[in-house]
Image (cartoon, rainbow, N blue to C red; front, top):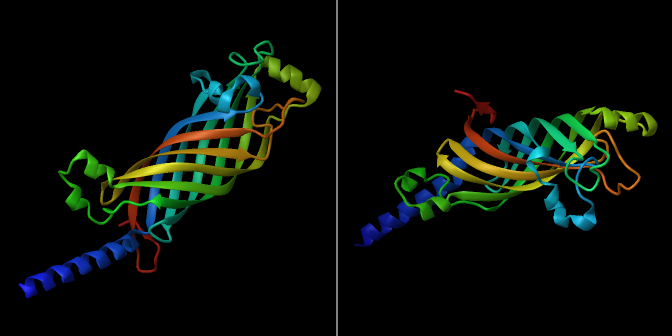
Length: 250
């Protein structure tokens, strides 16, 4: 009986050590993401007195898209850093909002490189134990969820196309149709273990720009720079670490 108990303890300790080390074999992750994009510039939208937390500015007509690629490195089980490249479009118009009479409309193409850190404040316990999850129920599957907060720094290169009404006012006040600005991503996300090599997830993050011209226009009533958001669905593939610590594509 003592030998049996000792065997169980040794096996349990071995599993714990293995679980603590297996993630190091796949420090690198390649991720693809896509989803809708939402912008909150000076064109379109309701005034603050008519708009609680900006929720009234969310509409189908103001929604565009983005596609995103990431290369992630895991420094620990709870802290990652990633290089992010995003191509997307933003759209805004005065059809729905506090300034319908202006009839401004702007479509902005963006390219955003960024360096982003992730902190996992809830980490699953089954990262190295996917085989034990197979065939389990819904609640067990939920225990394989990770939740993280993200923050970083990047830049956005933007190109604006305005309608005739916006271009006309731009001749009087100055219309910036292209430029580059620093941006600061901040947001939250969640990932789910699909199998030992693949994670699926969802992420929502805002980008706070140091420019007020992402729609090409700023008004005398503007008191803040432009903001845009991505709601992305993510597909992550875990890469094995090579002999020198670099990702292996074999």
